[in-house]
Amino acid sequence: MELTRLRGFQDLLGPSAETFTFIEERARQCAERHGFREIRIPLIERLELYDRSTGETTDIVQKQMYKIERPPESGATGEMVLRPEGTPGVVRAYIEAGLDRSDPEQRFFYSGPMLRYERPQKGRYRQFYQFGVEVFARPDPACDAELLVMIDEFRRALGIRLTVQINSIGDPVCRPAFRDAVLKFGLAHREEICADCKQRLERNPLRLLDCKIDAALVESAPKSVDYLCAECSAHFGRVKDLSAAAGVEFVENPRLVRGLDYYTRTTFEIISADVGAQSTVIAGGRYDGLVETLGGAAVPGIGFAMGIERLALALEMAGRAPKFALDAAVIAMGEPATRKAMTVALAMRQRGLRVEMLSPERKLKALLGRAAKIGARFAVIIGETELQKGVVVLRDLRASSQTELSEAQLAETVLAARTE
Ligand code: HAM
Image (cartoon, rainbow, N blue to C red; front, side):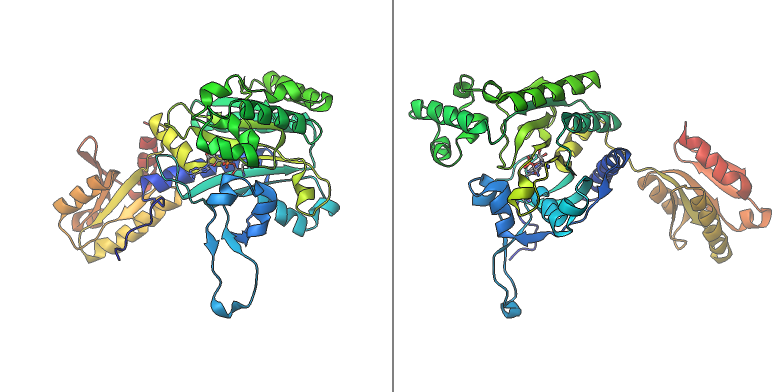
């Protein structure tokens, strides 16, 4: 057996991990600015949770769940799985904490890995990271619009271009008629649709609408907006009005039905033109019946999740990925200078500078080479002479020039170079 990582799983080293953290931090700041509080939920849940929420007939539940075995001595029963998405776990936690009855209006954000057994390709992995938000007890369209505004703010914070697509898929009052119309359409074209869609027709006909293979045929399929009841139609109209008034640019996509079962009314997907076939970087929608389906009170919900891998790709393509910048490498020559160098480095770090101490046991030339290799902007050199004179040498590694400075001037000079 070779000790390599599993297919569809990624190691994130250095720059990739830093880009992830950068995106997660921006997302967290944006969520906090909108009043969201953090929630942390388990990686493992009961299979039944996803059966009853994500949906028994969805690809996720049918084909993509990682099942977990308990140790033989456990004695517990019921199947357990690794979470394929965050929404069901958050809803379960919300109900389990009794919030649906005691204090229903809540807004949470979460972040972490999800697992789905999918066919790996660029932008699609078996373990991937999501940052998600969920809002409870806000049935009003202003909440849907606020989430779109928040996504727009986040997009600006990253400095990338994204397209917002929205749709409404109705509610339990009007969706059955739409579902029937799509089923009828599918049956009428049974000979033309792909093998997967033939099966989908029986289990979940709406999935036909986002089939990539049958895209041309789907152009003439029924549209959900044509089947909305008066309430759903008014809700969708308000979402669009309020979003537009807040400066959010969006397009309507009548094919946007989403691959999870719990959605009602507003659904949306945010697309990047720069990341290849897996172009949906953020997706979400309203799920007004889910809390009740999972045993809670009749509390509406809405949320979205972003795929960090796909956003990282978009950021890299736009040349906006963060670059790790080390301000200085500290080089000490000899034992007394090493003592001094430790306090010099400490004082610089206290000013917020990124400073790495290099090994005092190598030659100056090798250490300067090392400082350049790790991308330090400056080398701070302290030897016997500097100790005696009470100064340090600051070597600008870009300009290959150096000056003598007092310790007091050091941090200021390096900080000033940050804004150059
Ligand atoms: P989802 O559309 O299944 O929705 O996933 C949301 C996002 O996660 C996708 O748009 C994509 O960026 C990312 N993603 C999904 N699968 C993969 C994968 N295999 N590899 C890389 N990235 C992936 C949900 O998960 C819902 N829980 C969203 C939501 C929250 N709806 C309401 N609240």
